[in-house]
Image (tube, rainbow, N blue to C red; front, side):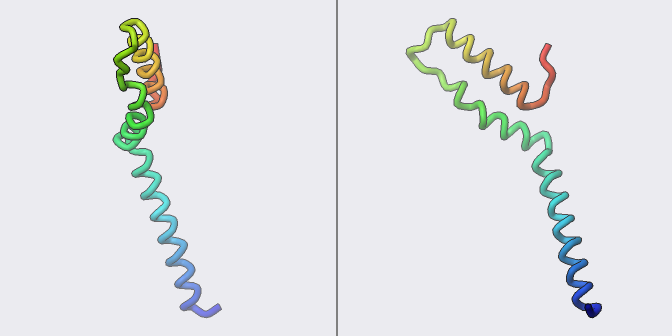
Length: 76
């Protein structure tokens, strides 16, 4: 292999490594984790008018626990 081909391989490998690290850092940032968890459990918070008050409180408690679990916050 000549030097030019070797340089291209090194540049491509370095670029892919940098992009992978940048993506993972952004993907695992606390803000993005929170956004993903909110979107995941947003449907649980839509109040149906036919739902009783007690049932609605149970739904909110379950959704709250699932949200905390998604965020990685230990529950008491």
